[in-house]
Image 1 (cartoon, rainbow, N blue to C red):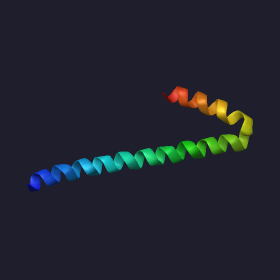
Image 2 (tube, rainbow, N blue to C red):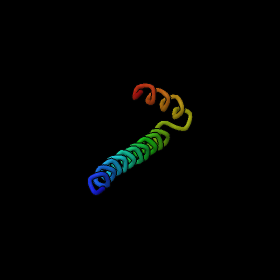
Image 3 (cartoon, rainbow, N blue to C red):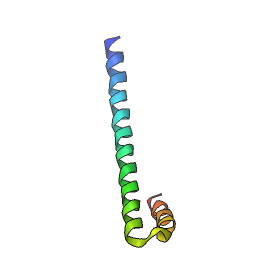
Length: 57
């Protein structure tokens, strides 16, 4: 029983770290696009963001 609980706990910790990483990554991208919109103007944002997303994927 205890080994099973430890295994589940370990998986939960890994899931928690992945979730944390995704949230941080999302905030980083949002901040980057906000910065781009401040520098380049609002008209450039949708086009550049689509290109950046395509480059990442």
